[in-house]
Image (cartoon, rainbow over all chains, first blue to last red; front, side):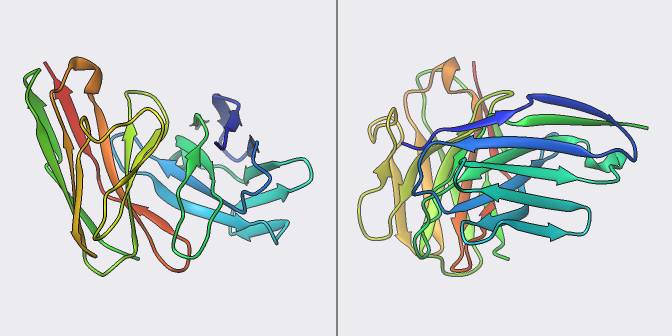
Length: 114
Length: 113
């Protein structure tokens, strides 16, 4: 099955700095890569996703890049704010129509220092 | 986005007993999934709940331990059977829309004592 590795496991950044989280996947058939943010005691929330036919996607302060050849993708958060503190999970899926069974990375705990 | 209601939100159960978790979606969805999140860990897929047929279980999960029902396109249940303390986790229902997003219910925090 798909194996997703995520690094680093913890990340502490100064407010206003950038944060980068990296993931690698094993199955070249994977074609959908979402990122989730989970605040303490809450459900995972989708923050951005990317498909294998796109190399980069941005949404305000968040961007995701994908390198299919190397089988890795990254989350970039710019101008970090205290409310960005949370656990972030990457995931991969060999999605077909309406079937998005996800394999998750281990998670990265991001702490933004004020 | 789909609105997913999951209940109970939390429970404390005695070992050897069973708990059934319900997941209700406000619209018809093709795919429903059940995930487990052990304390401080990532999410692991338990099974895909198939409407009108038996659930599809991932490696390491079996029907006798985690029976799943999916009577229609908006509802599913997961039962955690013959519980032990190792079953203490958060159990999450999720659904996928045709546009690829996967949404999660608020989760059921289970503690087995």
